[in-house]
Structure formats: C-alpha cells, structure tokens
Image (cartoon, rainbow, N blue to C red; front, side, top):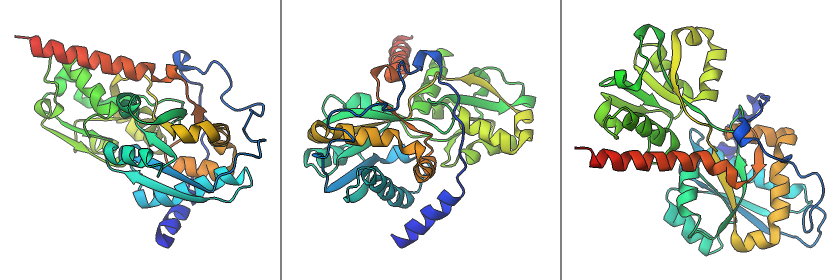
Length: 326
C-alpha cells in the first residue's frame, strides 16, 4: 500500500485544474447540481453516522488508471467524504472484474457504493440492489464524445474507405460505448458489424496518447478516442491538429454512474450525495477526480442516460436488419 500511495502522490502532484465548458443543450441540468440548502438527514443531521464505507468499481470504469493507484486514491476519497461530516470511518476500495462478483458483494452488504459504465448499468439496474445518485463527468465538458480520427493527407472522408486499414482505440473491449458506436457506424455503411471483420487490425491502448499518436506517426490509419483526449493531445502538440482530422463524431454520453446499495441509500444518501457533489471544490478532491479522469460529480438524472439508450436501440435495430439482409 505504501508503494501505491507513493504512486498516487506522484500522479496527483502533476494534476492541473481544467475549466469545464457548458454541456450540450439537450443534456443541460435543469437546476444547479450543487446542494444549496441542507436536506433532511443530510449534512446537518447528526444522527447519520458511519463506521465504514466501501466503494466498488467495475474494472472497465477505471480505464487507464492503475488499479493499485485507484484503490489507494479511493481510500483517500472516502476519507474526505466522511471528514466533511467530522466522522472517522474505515474506508476501502474494491475493483470487481465481473458483474457477478459485484452483485454478490452488494447482496452480502460488503460494498456500499459502486461505479458502473452506462451500458452495464442499464442492463443490470433492475436486478441489482442499487439506487443511482451521481454521474461522473470527463475532464472537459460534462459528457463523453468520441471521434474517429484519420490523417488529412489520406483524404479519407467515410468509414467505408477504412476497409482493411489499421485502427487503434482507447478501449476495445466488447460492450464499451466506443465499440458500440463504431459497430453502429459500420452497420450504417452496410459493413460487417464486427470491426475485426472490417479492419486489418484493431488494437486497444490504455493511454489516449497511445491511441492517437500512432495515427500521427503513420503506424495506424485511424483511431477512435474521446474528443477531450484528442483536444488535449493537440494542445500539447499543435502539429497533431494540423496533420489529423475527425471524420465522424458521436453524441455526448455519460461516463459512469455511481450508485448506493439500496438499504444503505435509505439511511445515508443525503450525506454521501452532498459530499460527493462538493469534491471538486476541495483541492485534494480535484486532484483525486483528475486522477480518475473525472471533472466533477453531478446528481443523477434519468435524462442523462437518453443518448446511451438511443445508441443501444439504434445498434440493435441495425444488427437485426443486417441479419435479415439477404
């Protein structure tokens, strides 16, 4: 743990504060996300007392964050949440490789708060004992957008023209939003749904720069990355922006959903939600959020899932259409 803590401290020391632009109009919160007044049972309720707090992550939510660093940072995170209430708690972070192990932990009351990617959340919410309370935002903007990037001198303007070319992605696992968006782009062009059947190769990279720079150096023909990651790389190296361009952009998608275990929610939701929403106001809280590639946490609203649900419906409709195609 000492080594992990040292690694986190090193990472946090390099973090810079990033200003967030306004979200797309369709996903703009209708009311201020911060808690302006104390809620019953919330920050001013001295009856709400915790002796322990366990935060769990689906492994896919961590992206390019080292799990050891995530565990160490999350312990600090949980301690900060409770410190605002002047409570001392035993905090712990757990990373779950599969949904089954997370569900078992929830039902055994071994984890209090869990982070899930949007697709998994939508598929599992009806049978998991959880209540969503917050969403995470990326470092730039309030929602994730993905872009398909190519070299300008390749003169490629459509996905169809990338057949038998080399592709890199930030996350290449099945079920990720970038992968589903890519499959949807292919099926719209009447191409095979599976990227490996269309491209010469599909390679995943944990770091955004390892996704984008191979295209810049001619080691790959195209990449899919988050818009915020691409813009960051361009800022660091303006030549990248001169030589690369986007030929497709996704809708804005929520990054991850944070939920409390149902029985825990009934007693502690106001305390936890209020303090999570205020993390970005604390210097140490901002550092930890940035380590997790998060800008801030907003109170959950069903409308934030609309674009994900729309993408999944479109993907399924195109998949069924391709099956029926002679």
